[in-house]
Image 1 (spheres, one colour):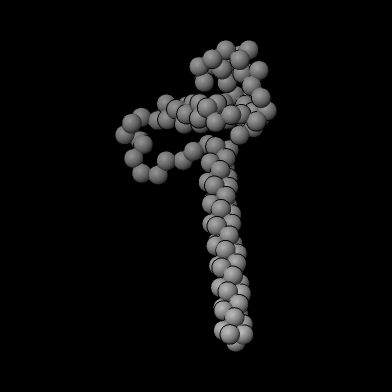
Image 2 (image 1 turned 90 degrees about the vertical axis):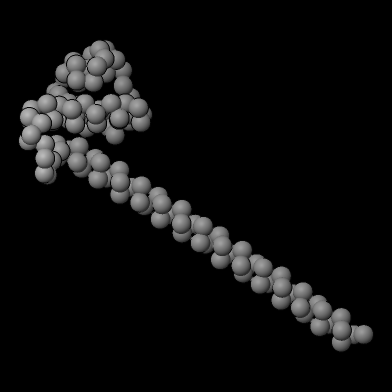
Length: 121
């Protein structure tokens, strides 16, 4: 998650973000542009918490909507996780095919060597 997305979700200023996340404004200003996972988790938790504090508990049944930017970020992360899993599966399948071809070539060479040895004898 980018720092700009966190700022968009939690407030226009670093002090607003800090108040919601539970740290100081100076700490938020020192955040890197690409937030590490622990800060991403804090931002998501603060965003969801902020969203639910404005609704009574009885109103949370049924469909619950998230902030559009948070939803887009979570959807993108889930999509990227699927892409990485597909890449990993494809890489494993490719490695298995290469290994099977290598074994087939070795077996064919071994069989030819055995045939040539038997014909020579």
